[in-house]
Length: 317
Image (cartoon, rainbow, N blue to C red):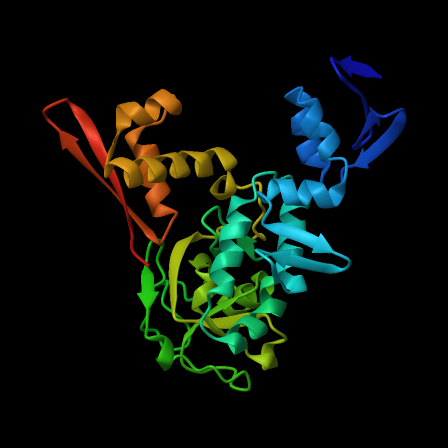
């Protein structure tokens, strides 16, 4: 075993053993607290390491105290949450996430959906592992379209990368018994890939969970209807999204959070100030942050007085 000052530990095959109070604690890679313990050991934080040995405590710590577990019930801000929301948390932990800000924002947005029926209908769909959560708490799913990027049903909606579509929520059919009806449809990977077909395209789209209206029962919960979404990119390899892709990079999320906080405090932030905290960040990097976040508009203007960019962020949803 290695002695990292106070922490006595040993790495195993997909596990780490921590000696605490004379007792060995084996934490395997499938445990919710595995990644956070690794980070605490690397940081030589003995107090946090021992605190995280308890899985329930670890989840509470990683969610800043907002998630508590009592018996077999899980609570978010003292409100009991559905197992589908918990499954998204478990999936992110298994994927190596220790920063759970995105999941917390996702939960806030889903619980703010104005329709109880919509929330209840959404659970079987969002529980799918091919529906991912972004750092801003939105969901990414799939849409099968024609080769010219138009929707297959009407041919009226362009789904080229960057396209945004919105309609009044009251105009979206909320009847689960109606398969094809009014509203924008987003599917699981399997459903959308089949819908796109060999002569069409598969697109990655993003939507806010509060904009979910209905999940038709006839499709085995593999598609839903929303009132607003944005097209992110074409899925050229037609493979299932993974959390390892750049869109879910924690550093990318930290950069956006820094810019957002600075703008909230000072209205704008300069590129030079950003680079002081995130070296090598270019203006192109800042612009790409806005392109991947449909609810925000990142603007920039060159200031001749001090020869630098002024950057602002506007919430548009």
